[in-house]
Length: 563
Image (cartoon, rainbow, N blue to C red):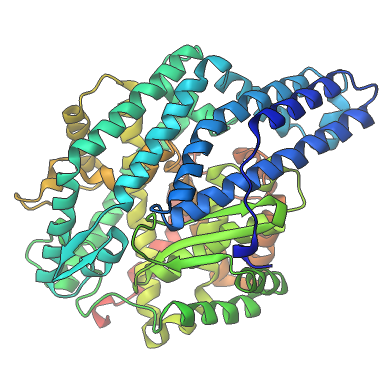
């Protein structure tokens, strides 16, 4: 069955509410644990069907944000999601208070109950209208970015399509492209300021109504972080500032020397090599063909998985007008189908995003028979699968890059290191914003500039570049759509480096470790998952330094002048 044959039907909210109320009553009145468990399974089936419809809206709306039908359906989902959550929380409260809880924990695992306790803390009916507003504002952000039409060299491009110009080996083109993008963000500055101001206010209001001091802890609880806290993340960010920023500063000096520049500007940071960045040696269709070969060779499991995606047309990879930017993977429960969304633009990022999202898709594909709460792990754990898949694909990169494979590997590995300070910057910025929710837009921009000097001291803006006024974060969708999520990428990047190091020595054994990790799905909280999978804990002092020793050794051993 092809993706375009998957049928969408708007959920009937009254009917759904009635069904969930009946199930809640049935769970409360269950006569034994077996009956209670059967009620939970029926609840999962109904919620999977609802989730299927919502995912179809998400995907089809993001593929074409100008589609009026799915634009209306996205508005419906934004409004309906908190109402559905209200009924879901009532059911999970009945689960928490069930007289058969110990037997249910034995069957379902304890984490589902810990998540239910957090759901109870992060939601009540008083905040439904506020949650609807929050959804509305995040959709507004998506629309603003998706509407970008930037005239450059006589043609019109969206933001994704401008990326190749920002990495062009001709410095004049890089500079002009960066200027065109900066001017677009400056033009839309009032819109971004307004939508973010609204988001900060409504999230703070929700937090206050739910009894939180501010949105920070609510943000953590929404992400179901049960075994680490903001203090742990702060200590982790300090490790990055102390151990990683100096290493990346040295890498930037190497880049400046490779590029032959007296002074490296912000618009130069997209270029890694003087003769141009690595690019895949073919178009999107050709890259998918290479990916099929790669996953056929990697393992029987990945072969079956990726051919299912291709045959079912569960990949939308081309950059198009009115298409949402970025990339993601989601899952459509009723069809047991992962879906990969991306915006290919002819850069090495095409291969990165394909392998990255394939890591997410493969994990959920291997976990599809688990209960819904365990199909996905928490965001920080989920990103281990995606970022590690990027590195586990290294032995097959010659399929995509041919004679430029070594050049790609150097850029990919060093790029992973360079990402860590930026990821910490995004997280630190959000803690500052939600810790001081009355900041004006100017204060937020000043905060971003201050933190940029800490985490990215090598980033120098030209005086006339409006993004230098502290606007760069406008382009980071997670700040608007998924608060406090972004640090998860950095945690996963550190653990992906660990997989990379082991894969250099023993690919078969490393693959088996990765496969077992994927099969665990979301049955464990983050720190416990690390313990179960025998992975190092990035929050522990010294972990980052130890994991990065082989990475630094590899990069130091490369004569990058040959590139």
